[in-house]
Amino acid sequence: MDKASVIGSILGFVFCAIVMLKASHGDLSMFWSDKGMYMVFGGSLSVVLMAMPMSKIKCIPGYTRRFFFHKGMEPVEVIELMNKLSEKARRAGILALESEIPNIKDPFLGAGLKAAIDGVEPDAIEGTLRMEILAMQDRHKAGKKFFDLIKLYAPGYGLVATLIGQIGMFGHLGGDIKIMGHMLAVAVVATMYGTVLANAVAGPMGDKLALRSGEEILGREMMLQGILSIQGGDNPRVTLEKMLAFIPTPARAKYRQAA
Image (cartoon, rainbow, N blue to C red; front, side):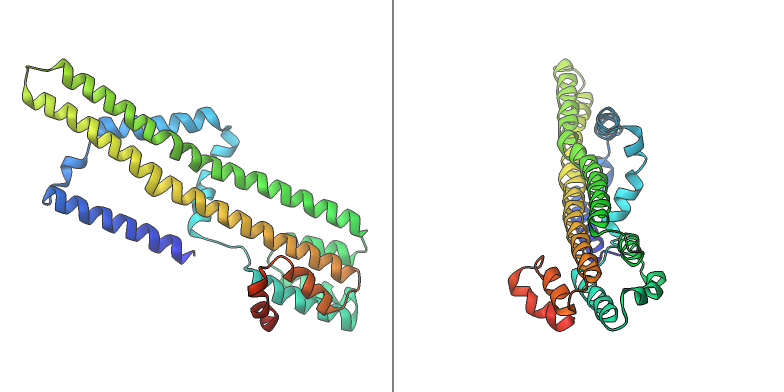
């Protein structure tokens, strides 16, 4: 579980609830508007349906899970594992790594290592794994696109609801003040829904997914270089240095110690 995502989500909800309680003196019903909900959430859903194919929309629960749960390996874990595999291959030969494959949880690394053990040409291994990375990037872009659409259009639908509420209010000028107040409430609350949905939910979730995507791509590039280095019979120190090339220079000493 991504602790930062969980803590951030809870803090955002708590602080928002505190302000709403203080502003309403405990009467939270003033922040409810079914018309605003229909416009903002229904409108955002319509945009997603218009902009994305159904095959991508079916993956939305998975995009949300990726925000709260991160299964990818951290760079230090990749370095430790690849260093261990490199040293074993150096001592006992690359065929000795076959016993390690069942213990490797990452399917990308497992498939690449198995191909190297089976004697597949390095160019073929690299080509296959790079296609895997490209396919993964495409999947990640779809997840980011979903949240970007909501971030972009939810405030717009909030504005539409605001305009509808204002038109209704102007249409009742000189009439029942209760109706005018209700229409004004629709206008203001709908804007709040759109703003909160875009800036407190969709925006942060999309940004976190983009960061996670970059981290996962980095990790897989490190695995790819490690596999090719092991297959080429490089010294474990050389394999380590190839992977450290992906890490910022100030952090490399820490990773060398970890390895």
